Amino acid sequence: MWHTLITRHSEFLSALWQHIQLTVVAIIIASLIAIPLAVWSEKHRRYAEWLLQITGVFQTLPSLAVLGLLIPLVGIGTPAALIALIIYALLPIFQNTYLGLTGVPQDTLNAGKALGLSRRRVLRLIQIPLAMPNIIAGIRTATVLIIGTATLASLIGAGGLGDFILLGIDRNNTDLILIGAIASAILAILGGQLINWLFRLRGWLRRITLSLLLILFIGGSVVPLLPDKSAPQTITIAGKLGSEPEILINMYAQLIKAEQPNTKVILKPSFGVTTFLYQALKSNKIDIYPEFTGTVTASLAKNPVKLPIGADAQTTYNAAQKVAKQQGLLLTKPMRFNDTYAIAVTQKAAQKYGLNSIGDLTKLPNAKAGMTAEFLDRSDGMPGVEKMYGLKMPTVSLDPALRYQAINQDQVNVVDAYATDSQLVAYKLKVLTDDKHFFPFYQGAALMKSEFASRNPHIVKALNRLDNRISNTDMQKMNYAVNVKHESASKVAKAYLVTHGLLK
Image (cartoon, rainbow, N blue to C red; front, side, top):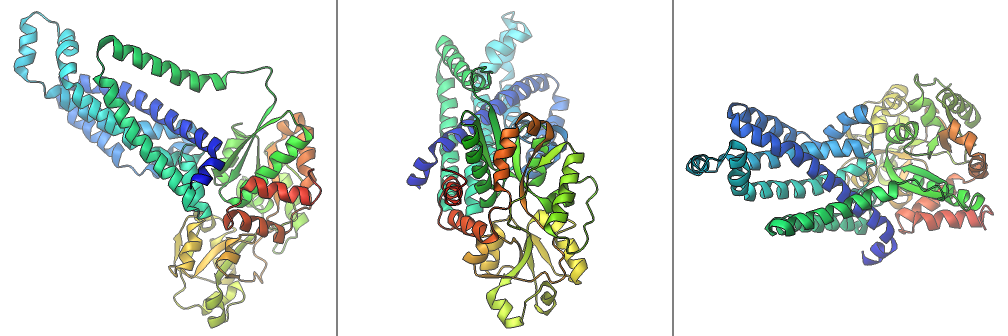
């Protein structure tokens, strides 16, 4: 684990800072909402119960559902993550502040009024100081809660320590999972202790310390965002979940740097599923991401393209190119490998029941499929497979990495796969023949905005060097090196490019 941390220290520090930023901003905004609301509620107690119920309902909403609901409204990335975290922080801060204020003895308040203090001064000089332990406890509880919940921000491309956890799950790499989980736990402990320490300080010392911390935080967040006219061009390349997209984006980065050494390339691996990357590209949050021809025709077209059964690679690419052009996008020339969908079973089940083609699944007793949510929902996924082959079996939705563990542990006996997945070799699975040619071609190509391509012809030229390169065997070997041997995607990508004369 220590070796992994040293190797990925720059990624770790970036993820840690993103996590801190999300937490601090969410807590500040939630406090600015919840504390004044609690002060108001203390004098309007008939509404307090309603507000407590509302914030309580917010707390019970599943975090993934909240993120999913926010995406259509504010898009993916930091805004959606921040709103979700603020929602979860409201209850503990509001509840503790309200209980602290209402818990001040009435005799104490009457004494203040008897001394001629106005309501505002009673609140400032008596109620808030006496309620401060409760307020601090609420902020501390919210901070710990938010640090844990913020790990889910990586699901929508907002970064944070969740990047390590998701990557570890995807790669079946315990070291990465532990790094993200332990760092999050330590950060939660330190965050709670820091809040306790800050509020133990008194008077000017507390104000100066808080001001310095705020200045450092704002400076660390804003300075990197300031435009630098002398800085080189910056290109952001993102990839979907999995080793294959990460290998491809590293290839893209290395080819671009070779063509244009002064270009700064930012990589965002494991950015999310297809819809997240597509939205990020359209909203200029990223510049390039690797996509597949079959996905463009089936999922990115406003009306899915009806390709003829058994359409060849060129027909599929031409259709994908047309869809991309209609949406102001450009698809580079495709690579050779066909990372099409596949249906897989264990070798043991295949031999026992004579399973060779997808249609043979009707012979499999007690069939139960574990498949990704995307495959279960796509017209070119399980719904289409069932219709084409006359199948009907119970299915469960699983994370892309976990479905392989599930079939290995006999929790399911059928899974969806990609033709180049290394897990097909690692778990000794048999890919069933698509004898009716249902699955279209899925050749990889770089997707970008047409205007970006027009401004950067050298980048398009660099990426087109992968035209008709990388066979299915090549890609499966590279995926195996990353997933099973735990080699870095950057190293694996460079080895291929150098070996095949694409890079010095």
